[in-house]
Length: 392
Image (tube, rainbow, N blue to C red; front, side, top):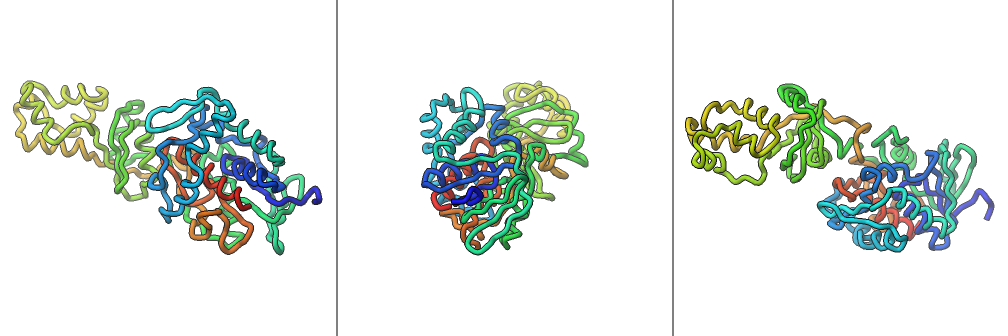
């Protein structure tokens, strides 16, 4: 086979691309990975605070967002968190489980990158970094790729260049350009797992910048019990990042500031201590600055004994369903991932191959499948890359 000829060219040396390359190489395919950055796995290296939240033991299809909620089922069922954990253990990487099923390296995220590179090397995969792809063509039964320092061709081409989130890491919408080049539909991408910005009356809450508290955050049918964080621009923290994937302009985000309390708790507080105030009761349940801000906005002054039960019930309802109306997000610059991408209607859920373009595959964040915060997006990268690697 000529030096410029391969069985498979993978565009992108991220999580999905490296997994796909290793799998295809293990089948005896001659594989070349082209990466625009100067080193592979840059997003992996910064993930999980540098320790890489590499999967989640609670992975299930209902924890992924897609125009087709059934699409991810096949890949996720055939390559599971247990399968990836087996690879981690086989490479001697120490790991631990944190809250909500999140698995992290004990050491560094670089161990995951090195593991993937070892798997690629074992399979004879060639990886070329610093390669900016200038042109891609579909010729006959194969593809020709012109990059910075070479022109190469292959029977199979895998789009693994991710989405536009975190552009400072070199992320772009190149995957969508390629998809459209080959006539594939793209679901409009938008930032996900991203802080929300506040305006209007909500802007007053910016004064609470730095305050965090456990909440239940809701948007539509989605709800998450985690921490919310007030910022100088609006709302962040795990609960907010989670609902941001479901939020669309014009929608409200609802916050239950006391998710453990049952209806009637404030009336019970009055009965237990009639001289208590709403402010003092809230200060016992949450950070003082937040308690004061909420008490000021609700406006019940003086001892609870002076307030009718109906008034206290109204306060309970407001605290359980506080409406925020975000005016936007902090955009792709602060988004961890992207909602939207190459339409799943164009792809085989079993192989990730384009139905109308034989030999063309798309994996990972490039595809319209987005997971929750907490290792789910890595598991989709492993599963979709693995699926494509069995066929490409």
